[in-house]
Length: 319
Image 1 (cartoon, rainbow, N blue to C red):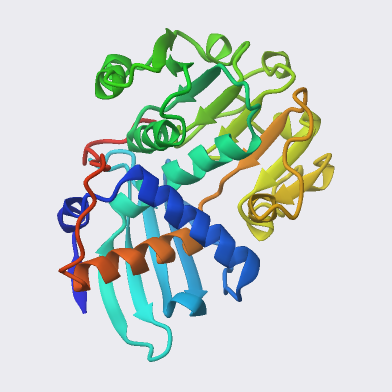
Image 2 (image 1 turned 30 degrees about the vertical axis):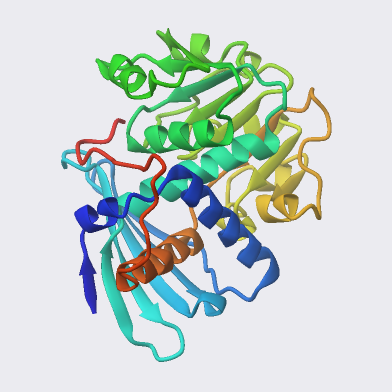
């Protein structure tokens, strides 16, 4: 069994483009192959703390495993976790892997892919809130998808994190950054909203803030329940993970993202549609990422990528 800490994974220099490819592979597998993917089990305890258990079996990759995620608001890494990776055919435990890198990378890649899949093609403005590692991964993946498109990114003001975020991506001349002082000004008039905050108390914005044609991508689902009731379409990475949502039966139209990516069902069909994409985060993504990371480590002769890679700060995530 390998023990694989964050530093080892980071040293592989896996690029945002590669993370996007692994996420697309995950959705293809989900659509085409047998996968055992029960919905995550979440246990909330005390104030703002939780433990999630996310199992998955992927026979086609000879992989199975589970990710355990915990949230402790006072901890240096607010949200952290570990992945246990097994050989599907033998049941052998292959690795105990730190999940910090994989969680941020796959979450950012899924959010960016949802933007590409559901946003208006002519989008001009993206709004980001919660500027921690997940938002940084999302931004890196968006830039990998749109290296030449000129667009504006609004950032919700929080302490000194906006200038730090801008500094990290200032080398990309096709992006212009703006700072929004409150959520209403962040959302009003924007083409897409990506929320990477880890917790929300109540509804974040009134219905009137969400213009026709907007795409909302809540990486962490709380705060947008009002959108459930009047958005034209709601998508998710997995039906079973959202079917117990309070307003699920009242969604106007629901679908999964995998058939849309495969061209089997339609995504956006009108520039005026309001679309909500709930990306709950699947154990499938984690096990696919873990399998590829493990394979790279045991194939030591494989050349490392030379393109820009993810490097996450192991500091407190933003609320």
